[in-house]
Every structure is written in C-alpha cells, then in structure tokens.
Length: 332
Image 1 (cartoon, rainbow, N blue to C red):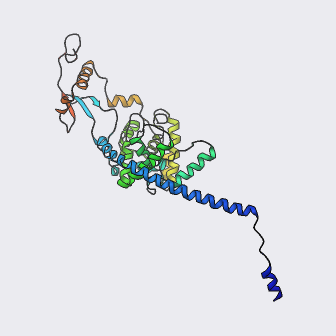
Image 2 (tube, helix red, strand yellow; image 1 turned 90 degrees about the vertical axis):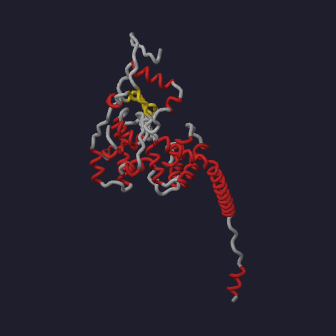
Image 3 (cartoon, rainbow, N blue to C red; image 1 turned 120 degrees about the vertical axis):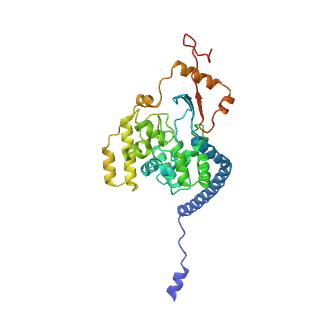
C-alpha cells in the first residue's frame, strides 16, 4: 500500500519545450492547410461558374469542324481553289482505329478515362518534379484541358490561364462524355504540315486513310501534338522515330499492346510523304486564268456566295473569255 501511494504521488515528467512547440506548429500548419484547401475549392467553384458559358463554344467548334470547306471549281469539275485555311476532315470516334486512340492517350493523358477533366495525381507528381528540378519541366495538361485551351486561349502561359483551363475542363466533362471529348480532340488538334485532325494528319504524313495506319504510324502521329512544327516526321525524322519509340513503350507499359506488337512496331521503318509529294497530289499550280477567277470571287460581295448551292458549297465556274495579251476580262 505504501508503494502504491508512492507511485500515485509521483508527478508526471513535464514534456520538453521543443515537443510542445512542435505540436503547436503542426496544429497551425494543419489549420492553414485546411483553410487553404477550403479557399481553393471555393475559388475553383467560382471559376467553374464563370467558365461554364464558354463550354457552349464547343458546339460552334463542332459545327465548324463538320462543315466542308468551300471550293471554287471549273465547269469540268477541277478544284481551282479551296476557301479554307485548315486541312481538316471530321471523322467519328468509332471510325478512328483503336491503336490511334490509344497512342494519343498514352502520349498525352494515360488516366484520361479516370479523372474528371483535371488529373490531380498527375498535377501533384509534376509539381514535385518541377520543384525538384527548379524549372517548369512538365506541363500536366489533360486532353480535356488541352481542348479547352485551344478553344479559348490566346497563347498566355500564366497561372491564371492554367487555373481557368482547369475549371473549363471540369465544365466540359459535365456536358460531354469522355468519348465525345476524345472525338473532338482528335479532330481539332493541330499535327503540323497544315493538318488539323488525325485524318488530315494521316494523309499529310503517310498518304494513308486512317484505317490503313500501322501501330508505328499511330505512335508517330500521337507525339506530333506536342511540337507539331519542329518534331513532325517531315522536318525531323530521327526525332519523330525517338518519339514513336517513347509512345510505343508507354502503350506497352499501360497494357495497350503486347510484347510482339511492340517489337514489330519498333522495327518498322515508316515511309513519310515529303512536302513536295503532298503538294503535287493535293493541288496544281494555278494558271493566270485561275488566279483571276479566284481573285474575282474572293473580292465579290457575299451575296454571290449566298446564291451558290449551300449544301455542296461549290461555285461552278464557266470559262471566261480572255482578251488578247492574256489579261482577264473580270479583272480589267
């Protein structure tokens, strides 16, 4: 009994001061973190509300992409001029081969079907990488964010722009399914060589239809999106092959292809269509007569265009009489 009283009577040793300070510091840090997260959520939701009306631009973009280019043709059906700055042909997602879709996802956004428009895990990983290397080594934009950026951005590279793209991406995925977003992206994105959309890119680089693309071809196209003017296979074949191999290994790591498919694609030596070959197939050098006709139509009032057949959007031109000396009566 005496021993028990002695034990009860003993005072508990006081905690070191550093331990008390550490607990206070952790509590303050946790509180600041909770307040920061809550503030961030509120601000992000407000940004989503402000960005929501911009999503409607996607409907305009869909209509624009699906609209065939206006053409000026002669009476014998020869295309004289295509009134469009972009080379694009819209294609449905079900008509895009699975390897092409998977290559884009492996190259740009491997968790595309898992995140809500913004990949938090990827953003955290990339933020850690950027801090560790002391520079903006990686971007972290998902496919949906890239689509949103192409619709509204004017080329700004600021935190505010990134924040807005994230909010817009979340809003986009509230109105469109994943497959719809991927379809829009594959038809809207620029691949270089004046090719907008994956179908135009297949024709521009390989002179192939989408269904004829090999796995190697698909991997090359997938990486063109990053820097379409610098590392496309027409301008830098070696770099394009390196990028292809990177995408193929990603596809293998993500279970999209097996080892045999990887090996076969890595050994393939793709034949790239050169600029001159494409130009000779797509258009002929306009004659002085053609140039005069084009100039006349482009400078004419829009009422002339409205009188044309809107469904085909073609202007069927008859031959014009040339005065002696080669000048055109329309341009005189």
